Image (tube, rainbow, N blue to C red):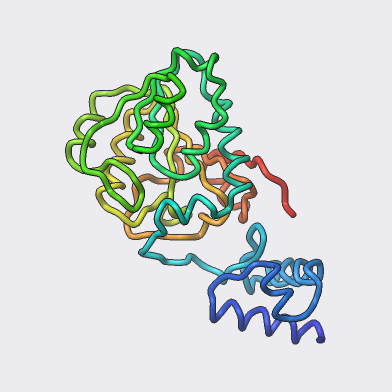
Amino acid sequence: MLTEERYSAIMQTLSEKKAATVSQLAEKLGVSESTIRRDLIALDNAGRLCKVHGGATLNGNLYLTQEDDVSTKQDQHSSEKDMIARYAAGLIEPEDFVFLDAGTTTFRLIDYLPVQQVADVAFVTNGIQHAAKLAAMGLKVYLPGGRLKPVTQALVGTEAVQNLSCYNFTKGFFGTNGISSTAGFSTPDFSESKVKTEAMQHCRKCFVLADSSKFKRIFPVTFARLPEADIITDVLPDSKYKKLTNIVEVGEEK
């Protein structure tokens, strides 16, 4: 297959699916993954697509409204989440007062906590699974109350928001469904966004934990603008985001 034929086939696939991985494209076109990577770099440089970690998407933001449940998301981008979680856990210092948002990457952060070092750290979390795991480790943990949202196992609602208003956190670690230069950090659910926004307003320092697949995605509700939090990610898919907030990359391009 000639180069231009591959380019056309790649763009046709993206027009149908909006995004594709290197392995998917290699299998479909019958070429090596290294060939696909070179093609994606060339097409990205030409402005015809957006190369992301492990694949490519169409240029522009992807607008979404639905999210997978916790059990599904736990297995997505597993190695990237582990790298991000390990780095984030290292930011927690003795005597910190931490807000830990519900989410699969923030949940993994708990696995990397040095228990003896954080024995005096108090955690507030709206994640039911997070609270149970922290308590099982013998750490101090508080729940804000509210209504349980089954799909994310998160506490949301007026009671949760009101109770968070009295806290003053040293650090907050948040999840997000989408990151966009125009829409900021976004999520599908209004009630969950209100909890995130309220908690962020009471944190001295905010960190958003997000693998590279979250970039250039917009969900219905913005809960914060990019300058309001540092981003910890595996690989940044577009350098323009560095102009908008502080970003730490903990992975390596493959």
